[in-house]
Length: 235
Ligand SMILES: Nc1ncnc2c1ncn2[C@@H]1O[C@H](COP(=O)(O)OP(=O)(O)OP(=O)(O)O)[C@@H](O)[C@H]1O
Image (tube, rainbow, N blue to C red; front, side, top):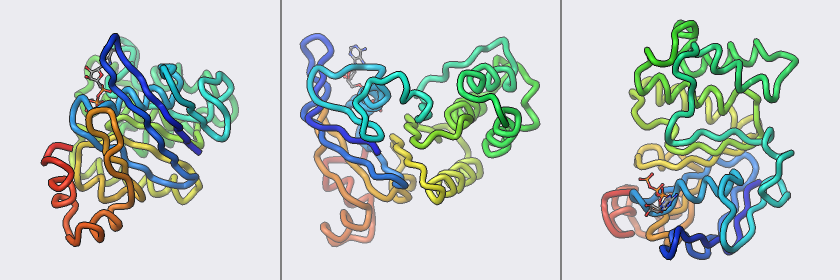
């Protein structure tokens, strides 16, 4: 569903990604890990077509990116929330939903507000939201048009454990329905929940595999040991 071949990118004369090759299959939950500054956000922006890489190919659903018609096929949640502060949660959601949905728009909006635990706050303007509520609304926006592919940059950062659990159960539900999910994360417990992982360091993929494969390879029960092996506690 997502395929990157030989992707390299520089900002000025600083190379931030070098020869990235990745493929994410339909129905997979794929985790992109790496310390701060390792290039995760740049890579997800390349996947969404927001940045055209200096070198390499990006394909979504077997089609070359960037491509306008593919926009409605994926949902993207950025690290920083792009919300209209003066509008209510409902109005924000409606604004984005209206790009893609006509039929069943209201049902979808109600559904994603429910999943993200925002139903009771839907009439509240966003400037009155906490950081975690804004994250949840951004996630609701990424989900509202029921896309095949979700590309989520740190979707659960700043959320309490109860909400994280409910959002992960939604991810699994989406996966059951054949959706493909790529997330970036710093959290080990979330990495453990992914089907496969890739670890970025200094703009390169230094390891890829399932959590089970990594643990087997290093003969450990703990993903933490795996991360320490690959060069430190910060993922
Ligand atoms: N628009 C830009 N112009 C110049 N440099 C940039 C730009 N965007 C990112 N960078 C640099 O590229 C490198 C990778 O940044 P990126 O945001 O992709 O890392 P990250 O792994 O997502 O980090 P974090 O986990 O902190 O979000 C960093 O050194 C960053 O300073």
